[in-house]
Image (cartoon, rainbow, N blue to C red; front, side, top):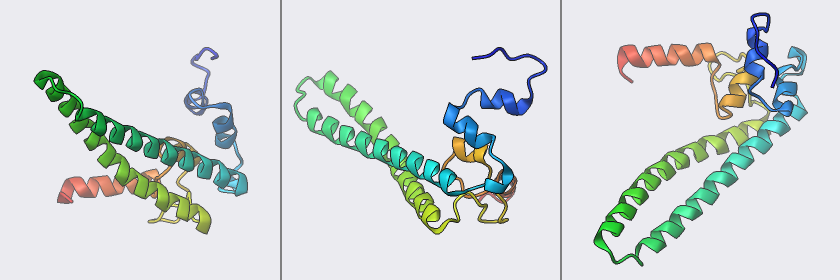
Length: 152
């Protein structure tokens, strides 16, 4: 990784944390936003996330089966606590799976990457960090401010 100095731009410093393929996306011209190659990149990324979550769900199921074979009370309590935390995490992942499926559907419809509120581009950097994003940063910030004010 190259050294970061004062002359390195903010965009370049942020790009240092991305893979080569992600850097290519970040440096794409604005007129190619959400072209076929970009949509395919995000489709692959979302499918990989989905497969990873489904795999961890299977691991949780395996742990649940394993729990029944433990006879020591203290060991069983430790395993129960671990499984409880794992089930909470799987619940969060199930919600994210729904968002992943919705994002994949938006890719099929070619509406992926566009803010559902303003119609503006969400932006490659934001989608790299949150591939299920449906709002551009400004719209998301507005929504969060409204939630703070009105408690929704």
